[in-house]
Image (cartoon, rainbow, N blue to C red; front, side, top):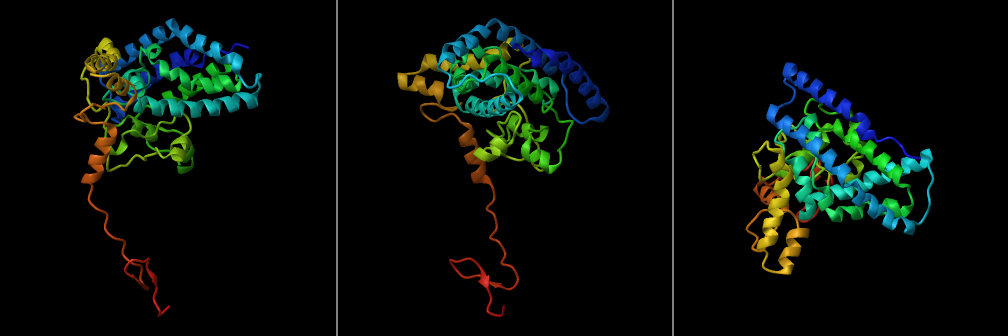
Length: 320
Protein backbone atom coordinates (compact mmCIF):
# COMPACT_ATOMS: atom_id res chain seq x y z
CA UNK A 1 0.00 0.00 0.00
CA UNK A 2 1.37 3.40 -0.98
CA UNK A 3 -0.34 6.26 0.89
CA UNK A 4 -0.55 9.81 -0.31
CA UNK A 5 1.96 12.39 0.93
CA UNK A 6 0.20 14.49 3.62
CA UNK A 7 2.66 17.38 3.24
CA UNK A 8 2.16 17.61 -0.54
CA UNK A 9 -1.60 17.48 -0.06
CA UNK A 10 -1.50 20.21 2.60
CA UNK A 11 0.91 22.60 0.83
CA UNK A 12 -1.80 24.68 -0.93
CA UNK A 13 -3.55 25.05 2.43
CA UNK A 14 -0.26 26.17 3.99
CA UNK A 15 0.05 29.01 1.49
CA UNK A 16 -3.57 30.08 1.96
CA UNK A 17 -3.19 30.04 5.74
CA UNK A 18 -0.04 32.16 5.57
CA UNK A 19 -1.97 34.76 3.55
CA UNK A 20 -4.92 34.55 5.97
CA UNK A 21 -2.63 35.07 8.95
CA UNK A 22 -0.97 38.06 7.27
CA UNK A 23 -4.39 39.68 6.87
CA UNK A 24 -5.37 38.76 10.43
CA UNK A 25 -2.17 40.31 11.81
CA UNK A 26 -2.63 43.44 9.74
CA UNK A 27 -6.11 44.10 11.09
CA UNK A 28 -5.64 42.90 14.68
CA UNK A 29 -1.96 43.44 15.42
CA UNK A 30 -1.74 39.98 17.00
CA UNK A 31 1.56 38.87 15.50
CA UNK A 32 4.28 40.18 13.22
CA UNK A 33 5.19 39.83 9.56
CA UNK A 34 8.05 41.31 7.55
CA UNK A 35 7.73 41.00 3.77
CA UNK A 36 11.39 40.12 3.05
CA UNK A 37 11.53 37.66 5.91
CA UNK A 38 8.35 35.93 4.74
CA UNK A 39 9.64 35.77 1.17
CA UNK A 40 12.88 34.21 2.42
CA UNK A 41 10.96 31.60 4.39
CA UNK A 42 8.83 30.71 1.37
CA UNK A 43 11.94 30.38 -0.80
CA UNK A 44 13.55 28.17 1.85
CA UNK A 45 10.48 25.95 1.83
CA UNK A 46 10.49 25.71 -1.97
CA UNK A 47 14.19 24.89 -2.07
CA UNK A 48 13.85 22.30 0.69
CA UNK A 49 11.14 20.51 -1.28
CA UNK A 50 13.36 20.34 -4.37
CA UNK A 51 16.42 19.18 -2.45
CA UNK A 52 14.43 16.65 -0.47
CA UNK A 53 13.05 15.13 -3.67
CA UNK A 54 16.47 15.09 -5.32
CA UNK A 55 18.19 13.29 -2.45
CA UNK A 56 15.37 11.08 -1.16
CA UNK A 57 17.24 8.08 -2.54
CA UNK A 58 19.83 8.43 0.26
CA UNK A 59 17.24 7.96 2.99
CA UNK A 60 15.34 5.30 1.06
CA UNK A 61 18.57 3.42 0.33
CA UNK A 62 19.56 3.43 4.01
CA UNK A 63 16.12 2.20 5.07
CA UNK A 64 16.16 -0.63 2.54
CA UNK A 65 19.69 -1.56 3.61
CA UNK A 66 18.63 -2.24 7.20
CA UNK A 67 15.10 -3.48 6.48
CA UNK A 68 16.12 -7.17 6.15
CA UNK A 69 17.17 -7.07 9.83
CA UNK A 70 13.72 -6.00 11.07
CA UNK A 71 12.43 -7.88 14.10
CA UNK A 72 8.88 -8.11 12.77
CA UNK A 73 6.98 -7.59 9.53
CA UNK A 74 4.09 -5.36 10.50
CA UNK A 75 1.19 -5.01 8.08
CA UNK A 76 -1.16 -2.08 7.55
CA UNK A 77 -3.84 -1.61 10.20
CA UNK A 78 -5.16 1.28 12.27
CA UNK A 79 -3.56 0.03 15.51
CA UNK A 80 -0.22 -0.37 13.72
CA UNK A 81 -0.48 3.11 12.16
CA UNK A 82 -1.33 4.70 15.53
CA UNK A 83 1.59 2.91 17.21
CA UNK A 84 3.88 4.00 14.38
CA UNK A 85 2.67 7.61 14.72
CA UNK A 86 3.37 7.72 18.47
CA UNK A 87 6.78 6.07 18.12
CA UNK A 88 7.68 8.33 15.21
CA UNK A 89 6.85 11.34 17.37
CA UNK A 90 9.15 9.98 20.09
CA UNK A 91 11.82 9.42 17.43
CA UNK A 92 11.31 13.00 16.24
CA UNK A 93 11.78 14.30 19.79
CA UNK A 94 15.19 12.65 20.11
CA UNK A 95 16.26 13.69 16.60
CA UNK A 96 15.15 17.26 17.30
CA UNK A 97 16.95 17.32 20.64
CA UNK A 98 20.13 16.01 19.00
CA UNK A 99 19.79 18.64 16.27
CA UNK A 100 20.19 21.33 18.94
CA UNK A 101 22.96 19.55 20.84
CA UNK A 102 25.17 18.18 18.05
CA UNK A 103 26.93 20.75 15.85
CA UNK A 104 26.84 18.57 12.72
CA UNK A 105 23.05 18.30 12.90
CA UNK A 106 22.63 21.91 14.03
CA UNK A 107 24.45 23.11 10.89
CA UNK A 108 21.37 22.00 8.97
CA UNK A 109 18.62 22.64 11.51
CA UNK A 110 19.80 26.17 12.35
CA UNK A 111 18.17 27.40 9.14
CA UNK A 112 14.72 26.74 10.54
CA UNK A 113 15.50 28.95 13.53
CA UNK A 114 17.13 31.82 11.63
CA UNK A 115 14.05 34.03 11.32
CA UNK A 116 13.64 36.77 13.92
CA UNK A 117 9.89 36.63 13.32
CA UNK A 118 7.48 33.90 14.32
CA UNK A 119 4.50 33.25 12.10
CA UNK A 120 3.13 30.53 9.86
CA UNK A 121 5.68 31.31 7.15
CA UNK A 122 8.43 30.40 9.64
CA UNK A 123 7.16 26.80 9.56
CA UNK A 124 8.08 26.69 5.87
CA UNK A 125 11.68 27.88 6.49
CA UNK A 126 13.24 24.45 6.05
CA UNK A 127 16.88 23.47 5.42
CA UNK A 128 18.32 22.44 2.09
CA UNK A 129 21.21 20.27 3.25
CA UNK A 130 19.56 17.39 5.08
CA UNK A 131 21.47 14.96 2.90
CA UNK A 132 24.68 16.22 4.56
CA UNK A 133 23.42 15.56 8.08
CA UNK A 134 24.08 11.83 7.79
CA UNK A 135 24.02 11.06 11.55
CA UNK A 136 20.35 11.96 11.44
CA UNK A 137 19.74 8.72 9.54
CA UNK A 138 20.36 6.80 12.76
CA UNK A 139 17.10 8.16 14.16
CA UNK A 140 15.21 6.52 11.30
CA UNK A 141 16.60 3.07 12.10
CA UNK A 142 14.44 2.05 15.13
CA UNK A 143 11.11 2.24 13.29
CA UNK A 144 12.51 0.31 10.33
CA UNK A 145 14.10 -2.32 12.57
CA UNK A 146 10.88 -2.78 14.54
CA UNK A 147 9.27 -3.72 11.23
CA UNK A 148 6.94 -0.90 10.25
CA UNK A 149 6.61 -0.64 6.45
CA UNK A 150 8.44 2.30 4.89
CA UNK A 151 5.27 3.84 3.34
CA UNK A 152 3.64 3.82 6.79
CA UNK A 153 6.65 5.53 8.36
CA UNK A 154 6.60 8.18 5.63
CA UNK A 155 2.85 8.66 5.99
CA UNK A 156 2.76 9.13 9.77
CA UNK A 157 5.78 11.44 9.68
CA UNK A 158 3.99 13.52 7.05
CA UNK A 159 1.03 13.84 9.43
CA UNK A 160 3.47 14.90 12.15
CA UNK A 161 4.91 17.66 9.95
CA UNK A 162 1.46 18.89 8.94
CA UNK A 163 0.51 19.18 12.61
CA UNK A 164 3.60 21.25 13.35
CA UNK A 165 2.71 23.89 10.75
CA UNK A 166 -0.06 25.57 12.76
CA UNK A 167 1.95 25.94 15.99
CA UNK A 168 4.25 28.51 14.37
CA UNK A 169 2.20 31.57 15.26
CA UNK A 170 1.87 34.41 17.73
CA UNK A 171 -1.77 34.92 16.79
CA UNK A 172 -2.94 32.12 19.09
CA UNK A 173 -2.53 32.41 22.84
CA UNK A 174 -2.95 29.42 25.11
CA UNK A 175 -5.36 26.50 25.10
CA UNK A 176 -7.08 24.87 28.11
CA UNK A 177 -4.67 23.32 30.59
CA UNK A 178 -5.53 19.74 29.67
CA UNK A 179 -4.63 20.37 26.03
CA UNK A 180 -1.44 22.27 26.89
CA UNK A 181 -0.45 19.38 29.18
CA UNK A 182 -0.50 16.78 26.41
CA UNK A 183 -0.13 18.44 23.02
CA UNK A 184 2.48 20.71 21.50
CA UNK A 185 0.92 24.14 21.05
CA UNK A 186 1.88 27.59 19.75
CA UNK A 187 2.75 28.64 23.31
CA UNK A 188 5.12 25.69 23.80
CA UNK A 189 6.71 26.09 20.39
CA UNK A 190 7.24 29.84 20.80
CA UNK A 191 9.47 28.87 23.71
CA UNK A 192 11.39 26.47 21.47
CA UNK A 193 12.10 29.19 18.90
CA UNK A 194 13.06 31.81 21.48
CA UNK A 195 16.62 32.97 22.20
CA UNK A 196 15.85 34.16 25.74
CA UNK A 197 18.28 32.40 28.09
CA UNK A 198 15.36 30.97 30.06
CA UNK A 199 14.02 29.23 26.96
CA UNK A 200 17.14 27.88 25.24
CA UNK A 201 17.12 24.17 24.36
CA UNK A 202 13.57 23.45 25.46
CA UNK A 203 10.33 21.99 24.09
CA UNK A 204 11.60 19.69 21.34
CA UNK A 205 8.24 17.97 20.86
CA UNK A 206 6.65 17.46 17.48
CA UNK A 207 3.06 16.59 18.40
CA UNK A 208 3.05 15.42 22.04
CA UNK A 209 4.62 17.77 24.59
CA UNK A 210 4.56 14.87 27.07
CA UNK A 211 8.02 13.82 25.81
CA UNK A 212 9.52 17.08 27.07
CA UNK A 213 7.72 16.72 30.37
CA UNK A 214 9.00 13.14 30.71
CA UNK A 215 12.63 13.87 29.80
CA UNK A 216 13.08 17.18 31.61
CA UNK A 217 13.23 19.61 28.71
CA UNK A 218 9.87 21.34 29.17
CA UNK A 219 9.76 25.07 29.85
CA UNK A 220 6.50 27.00 30.02
CA UNK A 221 6.03 30.33 28.26
CA UNK A 222 5.86 33.25 30.68
CA UNK A 223 4.05 36.53 30.20
CA UNK A 224 6.86 38.38 32.01
CA UNK A 225 9.52 37.06 29.59
CA UNK A 226 8.19 37.42 26.07
CA UNK A 227 9.99 35.22 23.55
CA UNK A 228 12.55 36.84 21.26
CA UNK A 229 13.19 34.83 18.13
CA UNK A 230 16.06 33.79 15.91
CA UNK A 231 19.46 32.38 16.83
CA UNK A 232 22.04 33.53 19.35
CA UNK A 233 24.28 34.84 16.57
CA UNK A 234 21.70 36.44 14.26
CA UNK A 235 22.73 36.30 10.59
CA UNK A 236 20.76 39.42 9.59
CA UNK A 237 20.09 38.34 6.00
CA UNK A 238 17.07 37.62 3.84
CA UNK A 239 19.18 35.89 1.16
CA UNK A 240 17.97 32.25 0.94
CA UNK A 241 21.39 31.06 -0.26
CA UNK A 242 23.12 32.60 2.74
CA UNK A 243 20.46 31.30 5.11
CA UNK A 244 20.79 27.78 3.69
CA UNK A 245 24.60 27.74 3.72
CA UNK A 246 25.68 29.73 6.77
CA UNK A 247 25.59 26.82 9.24
CA UNK A 248 27.61 24.58 6.94
CA UNK A 249 30.08 27.34 6.07
CA UNK A 250 30.68 28.04 9.75
CA UNK A 251 31.19 24.35 10.52
CA UNK A 252 33.50 23.90 7.54
CA UNK A 253 35.57 26.89 8.60
CA UNK A 254 36.07 25.45 12.09
CA UNK A 255 36.98 22.03 10.70
CA UNK A 256 39.55 23.64 8.39
CA UNK A 257 41.22 25.37 11.33
CA UNK A 258 41.07 22.36 13.68
CA UNK A 259 44.51 21.55 15.06
CA UNK A 260 43.87 17.88 15.79
CA UNK A 261 41.50 15.05 14.95
CA UNK A 262 40.09 15.33 18.47
CA UNK A 263 39.23 18.99 17.94
CA UNK A 264 37.70 18.19 14.54
CA UNK A 265 35.55 15.46 16.11
CA UNK A 266 34.40 17.82 18.86
CA UNK A 267 33.54 20.52 16.34
CA UNK A 268 31.31 17.92 14.66
CA UNK A 269 29.73 16.26 17.67
CA UNK A 270 29.97 18.66 20.62
CA UNK A 271 27.32 21.28 21.32
CA UNK A 272 27.04 24.28 19.00
CA UNK A 273 29.40 26.97 20.26
CA UNK A 274 32.05 24.56 21.52
CA UNK A 275 35.63 25.74 21.01
CA UNK A 276 38.98 24.31 22.20
CA UNK A 277 39.76 27.29 24.42
CA UNK A 278 36.21 27.81 25.69
CA UNK A 279 36.12 31.33 24.24
CA UNK A 280 32.70 30.84 22.64
CA UNK A 281 29.40 30.43 24.39
CA UNK A 282 27.19 27.38 24.23
CA UNK A 283 23.54 27.33 25.24
CA UNK A 284 24.60 25.68 28.50
CA UNK A 285 27.03 28.48 29.37
CA UNK A 286 24.47 31.15 28.44
CA UNK A 287 21.84 29.53 30.64
CA UNK A 288 24.29 29.10 33.51
CA UNK A 289 25.33 32.75 33.35
CA UNK A 290 21.68 33.82 33.25
CA UNK A 291 20.77 31.57 36.18
CA UNK A 292 23.65 32.93 38.24
CA UNK A 293 22.40 36.49 37.66
CA UNK A 294 18.90 35.74 38.96
CA UNK A 295 18.08 37.12 42.43
CA UNK A 296 18.11 34.55 45.20
CA UNK A 297 14.69 33.25 46.19
CA UNK A 298 13.63 34.44 49.67
CA UNK A 299 13.32 31.80 52.39
CA UNK A 300 9.74 30.54 52.81
CA UNK A 301 7.75 32.16 55.61
CA UNK A 302 6.62 29.58 58.22
CA UNK A 303 2.90 29.05 58.41
CA UNK A 304 1.02 30.44 61.41
CA UNK A 305 1.14 27.98 64.23
CA UNK A 306 4.50 26.45 63.32
CA UNK A 307 7.87 26.81 64.98
CA UNK A 308 10.91 26.83 62.66
CA UNK A 309 13.64 24.59 64.07
CA UNK A 310 17.20 25.26 62.84
CA UNK A 311 18.36 22.55 60.48
CA UNK A 312 14.94 20.89 60.28
CA UNK A 313 11.59 21.46 58.65
CA UNK A 314 9.01 23.53 60.52
CA UNK A 315 7.13 21.46 63.09
CA UNK A 316 3.81 21.90 64.79
CA UNK A 317 3.94 24.10 67.89
CA UNK A 318 3.21 22.50 71.26
CA UNK A 319 0.07 24.60 71.52
CA UNK A 320 -1.44 22.49 68.78
